[in-house]
Amino acid sequence: MGRYFQEDIETMPYEALKKLQSERLVKQVKHVYDNVKFYRDKMDAAGVKPEDIKSVDDLKLLPFIEKDDLRDQYPYGLLGVPKSEVVRIQSTSGTTGRRVVAFYTNDDVKIWETCCARALVAAGASNEDVVHVCYGYGLFTGGPGLHGGSHLLGSMTLPMSSGNTERQLQFMQDLGSTILCCTPSYALNLAESIEERGIKDKISLKAGIFGAEPWTEEMRREIEKRLGLKAYDIYGLTEISGPGVSFECEAQQGMHINEDFFIPEIINPKTGEVLPEGEVGELVFTTLTKKAFPLLRYRTRDLCRLTREKCSCGRTHIRMSKPMGRSDDMMVVKGVNVWPSQIEQVIINLGYQANYQIVVDRENNRDSIEVQVEKTPEMAADEAFDIAKAQKKIVAGLKSMLGILVDVKVVEPKTIERSEGKAKRVIDKRNLYVS
Ligand code: DLL
Image (cartoon, rainbow, N blue to C red; front, top):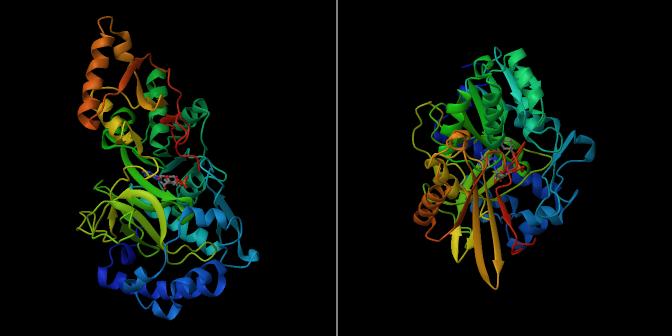
């Protein structure tokens, strides 16, 4: 499977992996205690000394770190090495508060690129491939991460960045792109543009590596069908390094976490209690080797479950399920928990494409929720299409999924803004969650 299927590491028996993790954890805890005042203070306050951490079993003694801690320490408070050793920064978009800036040494960048190279290999890539990267480049980690991984693998790498669909399609045809890297919502946007131009037979894509936002199995099937490729999920976050923290293999049954670099835990988000394998809860990561921006027990706010069941691909690293969204993505509407992914599932199952928007509002203390769904081009061309009947059907589907009445508006194709990066599915006008 090529040089970046790192068989010795990726198929390591659990006992050997635990030993490796424990050795790395002991070193990492000493590193942060000696070099980052924030951790020293936090560990002192919790009464934990570096010597108390002897193996991964002692992880639970360490305090959690949250996004607010990162914001409070902005910009340099968590830096674990002298500035002279930092070669790169990346940053979150900062839409929900102050930015988080993550730092990388040369080795940190290499680790991150290794993770992305493993993800590419798991999707069938080799140096024979043309890797078309249209995640954004710049502060966002998507472009630089997959670019670095592809480079390491020796594949021809097209640094397209996001947007300019015309140019994307031109290069895709002229250079024969075989692996597409972008958000799932942009993949659909590209599929639509390919269909409109009637150029599907000029496209040679065989696999796509899609992540950075939640997407359902229904959306996966739609992308695979419309782009004629196999769609692989990839997960990551800026704080922990970027894309490639975990990735799917050909089994498409959850994403293998690069456990030689990151230890995952699942906790009850309300109590912080560590949950047993298989239960859904908040994902927490400890970075084992990163030096410039080391994070111990970082609460991601992403909800998922873990499994160590045997995977048919032979990799032994633990798998995480698709995150169902972030704990802060969940809306409480009319007193009920609502996830955008539930809505997506219903509308795709009813034959619509994943072009939708959710608008939540509140008037006189009463919530309202409206889902706007686009007609497919076939529906728009069908003179007999009965919009009232179609809307009623979606209302019924959503009622049975969510248990509440949702207003549904079926709108003309191309009415809802297309995304070039992470799609913005929800407009919540209630201003309940100002952070
Ligand atoms: O989105 C890193 C990335 C780039 C991942 C490209 C995959 C591909 P951030 O902008 O910091 O980093 O956003 C991280 O995005 O905590 C999740 O909530 C969400 N997310 C990332 N990947 C997935 C995925 C990048 N595959 C936040 N499925 C994370 C669902 C995802 N949500």
